[in-house]
Image 1 (cartoon, rainbow, N blue to C red):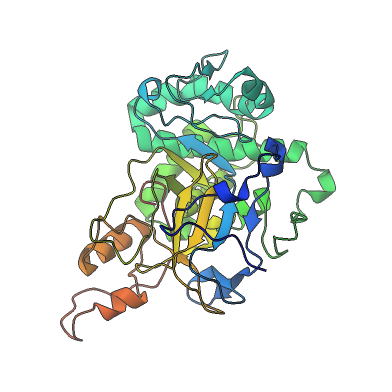
Image 2: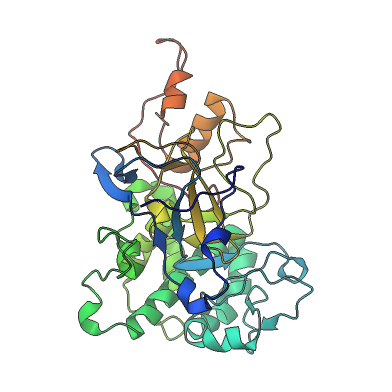
Length: 372
């Protein structure tokens, strides 16, 4: 069985999967190519591979965000703000009459219409008090990045809360899976997938962990304004996992390689999200997958070249048109993700032995929210 073939330009899109007779609820499950499997490498850990050959242009994955936040400087002036309802997440342009929170918790929180807001009430209720209490003070004291990171954690906890409310207690720790024929049982879903992410306190510098510890104690403790029921240590672990696995969302594809003669960058980031299955993909500077969010902020993986049986499926963690030289790529990856890239492209571009001053580090595949 093969997936639909994407366009010749290999634009990551799900338009060819969406039929006019489908309603919104039919589009709330991830789609995974039946040949896409999960495996474990002794050095890199979990990874994505194909069990049989996949052709260039085949759709490999359409993954729903477990949590998503907007990343725009001026939401009231931006056309890239997304509907807060996880069942929608469509772009809400300035020309459209946006619906805001009745409690005016944050200007970043908008919906397409009142129906979307009402449907999202349970999830938003979890974050609303926290946003109203802390959003402005965190931004003014710690800046946009820390605010975005903390808000994404809150939205992960909000999704967890909704999931637990809608899940029988006996299934909350049983690793429930989707029943779709297109989704192998090896792929975790929901909160079980999030808590199985790579990333721990040992993955980050002591100074970074100390900073996050302070933020957790100040803003993310279990309380009336944020009733998640986790310990501060568990929330800190969640931050370490989120920072290692979250995606930045950009308007154009990431990972096109070889670079075209007139390379176009991927544009300005407009959101950040956590994707349960997409997070399994490791990095290569010559990836065989391009990725891009669709119009509902689902992460779409498309094969950018033929992929052989057993071959790893890799994405690029950064915009390849921005960092072309070996040193620039490795400096970026070592600084942001704490590993020296040993992909085929990087190894082939290494200077003769003895000329390199780079220090070998163990491979750690850890993407961060601002650099992905």
